[in-house]
Length: 364
Ligand SMILES: [Fe+2]
Image 1 (cartoon, rainbow, N blue to C red):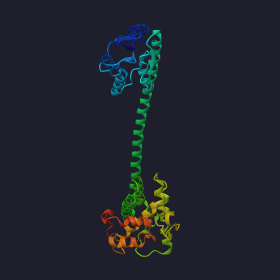
Image 2 (tube, helix red, strand yellow):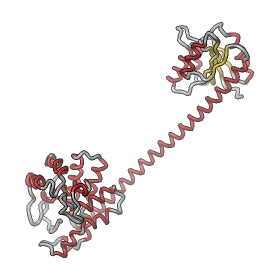
Image 3 (cartoon, rainbow, N blue to C red):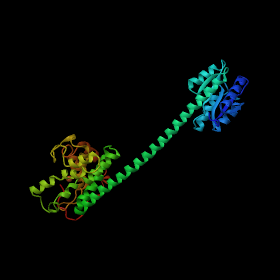
């Protein structure tokens, strides 16, 4: 027995006092450092000192105002946010009703008769102290585990942020690569990404899906990097062979994007951004909802951006003219769900169009 464990035995009235003193004596012989306390208020003070291993008291013990001492001690335990010291109650026939109430609430650790062999109380205290020790050990282990979990979550969050930053860097590097070869496509793609994100928000999509739409917009034409410069910058109409090359760019874009750790919707949107709602698009003539929602959004953003940007062979359409086309193509080129949301957007929400005099001969 650890002799440093301090016990408080509350001898607050004549009732059972003799038995309680004999219990205190036996507990002392057992090795506990026993304090004999003569009032409920002093018992609460001792409890607040936090180094009491257990308290032995009558079930019916009250303070001067008649409040049950057990309730006061449990209240203190809650207020102090500490694992409370075990309470061992002693009850005789006058205390059974109170002991039963406390038992139903689970407010004590053991109950013994307020007469008879004091070693019954000693054994009850031993078990209560041991049990509470196990609880404290378990709580300590749980605390250690919780601390480790929080550290792991923080590290996981930091890793996710580093990965996200690295991915943004890769996407940006690809965009720079495109811009050095084809400034129009780079600027167009960036704005398509912003418009697609805005349209996604108007459709009620969450932030992760809006981010995916922006990434799809930035990357949707990256496959054009495989086109020969002679085709990319051709000032006149494309011949059939050249046009066939151009028609491949959605697959070529997908062939690049699929290697990036991006959401699956980005690849689908890139591959299907030239499909049309009525099934007359390319490369697979998909129709309606067989086309991924992100691709339907991207298609509209792509066409709107192209229409409202200056091209070498025509001036940009006005916002009103472009919106007229969008409205007319609802259910044909574009998904009606997307056009309805798009037509409600303010012009200012769609960003500045591409406006430059550099020679760009093609945008499919
Ligand atoms: Fe395209």
